Amino acid sequence: MKAAIVGIAGPTLTADEVALIREYRPAGVILFARNVTDPDQLRALTAHLTRILPPLAVLMIDQEGGRVARLRPPHWHAHPTAAVLGALPDTAGLRAAWLTGALIGLDTSAAGIEIVCAPVLDLAVPGATTAIGDRAFAADPDRVGEMGAAFAAGMLAAGVQPVAKHAPGHGRALSDSHLELPRLDGITYEDLVPFSRCAHLPWMMTAHIVYAAQDPDRPATLSPSVIQNVIRDDLGFDGVLVSDDLAMHALTGSPGHRAAAALAAGCDLALHCSGVLAQSADVLAQSAAPTEAALQRLRSAVFLADRSRQRLDAGALAAERDRLLA
Image 1: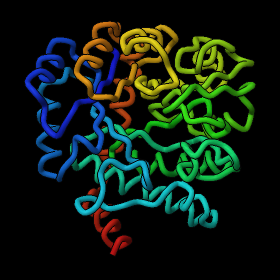
Image 2 (image 1 turned 135 degrees about the horizontal axis):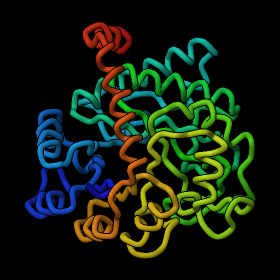
Image 3 (image 1 turned 90 degrees about the vertical axis):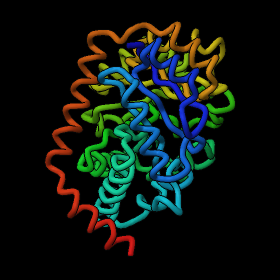
């Protein structure tokens, strides 16, 4: 198995994509709106992927609520933004965050998808890039941490593994890493608080941002010092660390070079989302196998989700979902 998660082009697998997956055995596939038409199609696609992917490989999707949602009406429910949840009074906000995470988890789990790239733990900072904006729960670091933890707990209750993002913090960036490489003077205590509160979660995603005080030359995704000293040591995070999308314009070099650099820096898995076959092939060809530590983290994440799923009363949770959305 290769330590990379890649995208695919459309709502069904092409013969070339099947051949690529069987040859390189990626650690997973991430799905986007281009891969989704309706529930029956999506379940057929995830079943096909599950049959041809190797053991421990995962299916992943972005489903935060608000504008970042790949499963949308009329076939799936819309969910509020993190900012809407964070603006609710303390207890009501935490309960709403948990329920939203659980409801998103129910939707994705029913579709055969076990990893959801949420919650966003970045801070809402006035004047910063709108790439985060209403995807953030709040400006207060403690509030973001507790809301993110509640949201993730709801997902875990539905048997889905949440991915906390974007460590060690994208909120203060003035530019969008989808378009260019943001630079900040350094990482602040406030940046880290939400991630520290959620360091128990099974997955985290890195940020494509240069934090000059920690590494003036490389963004966090490609920085051994940020990954080891900050994410692993300071935060104490020992789960699966996946890169943000390596196809984003914050990074340079070939897709394969980016993947190899992210893995060498300490990411457990390299994520490349374009779905362009040649780019996915380059990523997989230049990605190493997962380290033994990465494999153990994957096993632990799967165990955590399985244990949560065993405790789930799906009928009761589905009934609560229908009551709240009625």
